[in-house]
Length: 422
Image (cartoon, rainbow, N blue to C red):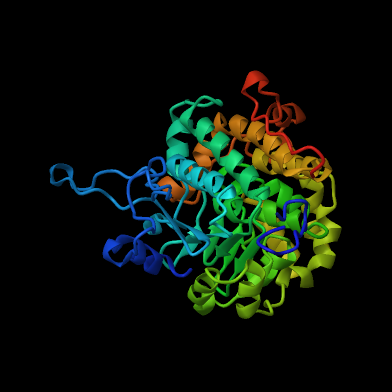
């Protein structure tokens, strides 16, 4: 049971107030009543048994002045609500390793804390919950040839995927407010939660193949379980989903207008998740993807990317032709690896098994040419002209795709689903 609610198992893993306002409340210690948490640096719980605020990777701003930057993750617990705020608004709250560790620490403590009934995750600022992982840091590792499970990025991904699995099995209501941009790693923080809320501003997606990478953070689990072939279309084109599409594809559950998010978060302090959400949820917009599902299913059911492209070109629908054009601009090897990953994930029974497979693929991608080149073209130099290698689908061999799925020996992620659970 969850705080008096019946446990719902939608996929086997059922278990803002806007960021600036949240951060402002946390910073004004004079407004904090005795017994409530106070912001501070990352660390263990204080002697009173209250959770400290975890500063994920904060660094001095002022040098000699001693001024310290604001924590990158704000942790608050009050009136039964554990509130986690990603606090890098200038980077659209891109997730880094210290942030992932801080969130994991808080969730593990709250799981057994009877004073916490519900957990909510929001993003600071107006732009989005989380734009994904900190790919500039990933690019630095990949470019320097520092790859493998023991590299900084390899260790980050290991802890990030462990966090994704923790969210998928969380024993209490986990409410993700997917307002604004939610990409890649942001989907990992939200898409496996029990109560996933989108707004009219939501833009949800898995953009990995556009930078020579492959959907991860449990993304292939979600994509492979979307109705029909919607997930394959989303993955290979890097399509952005609005609220209606995200709900239809199984990435979200509820639609709440952004203006009601602050009131929703306040209500969660006194009501169960189901009651609070019911007060503010409304009908979601129609899904554009569902309206196009007939040609999507027909084209993307093919067993190869080449055949998918052939079907898209032959379909005759303008949207199909546009999809073919989108796919042709992506990394050929990433496209082939992604399609195999999606088909494999469809046959795996639990999130943990999918994350284990994704970790092998991600580690292989870290040593690839296309990840370095894709991030360079899209994020670093921003010339939007990646020079993929191999340059075409025909040049990508099955043997090359096989290397992405090679076992990692004693460096495997090694997640195991709880016995009797899927």
